[in-house]
Amino acid sequence: MSGRREREWPRPDSCRIITIANQKGGVGKTTSSVNLAASLAMHGAQVLVVDLDPQGNASTALGVEHHAEIPSIYDVLIEDMALADIVVPAAEIPNLFCAPATLNLAGAEIELVSKVARESRLRRALDAYETEKFDYVLIDCPPSLGLLTVNALVGGDELLIPIQCEYYALEGLGQLIRTVDLVKAHLNQQLKVSTILLTMYDARTRLAAQVADDVRNHFGDVVLNTVIPRSVRVSEAPSYGQSVMTYDPGSSGALAYSEAASEMAHGGAVQ
Image 1 (cartoon, rainbow, N blue to C red):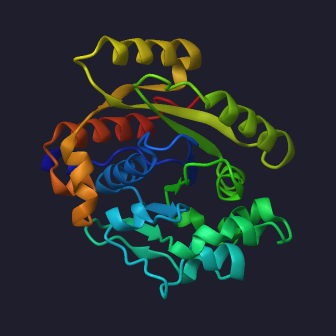
Image 2: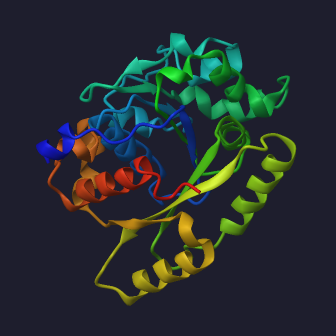
């Protein structure tokens, strides 16, 4: 793994801003955001994770403080604070940075309603920030299609959708795609579904293979070849304030996320 870490992957010509969204809970949004970011940073990329989930799980997994007194993405969206004033380095990994979320964000959905240009406040903050010093900005969304997720869709150029290899996996995706189409038509013409990541794959079940086939048939080339297996280590890592990439780099989950990030870096899923 150390040899793999030292090998730098190709870096994009300009910053790729990737929103990671699926309104279904428990599909691996935050886990994917954190571990893809960590993998990319370990291979030479400058990476920023924007935590838009009030639970702040991405901030926790990156070892970043996010209690109520900490300046957070809430202050950026609601109080017009500059993004530069809240971004902090992740604890364990060089080149990796985080814009943390606090519980204050839970009220942001309501507070945003009365704000001017409420759907594009994150985009405005990103535009005012030196995003070009990063190779990737990954935006982790809450499990809903509210104003926080809409801000993420307006703020990103690409959409990565994690889909778990379980029954009902494709249920609700139609609603997400319709929301993406609306955002694309009215707020962000650049937005495209660039990557689908299959998560929680259990090779022992026929269902997982069937779901994977269905997703590949439906979405085609944007589905990464790499699938993320069910892994206890992946679940354990955040409780230690780490990504699985540092918690257990030799585990099946860490190796899978590294392969998935490599595909993204080498342009395997970007058309």
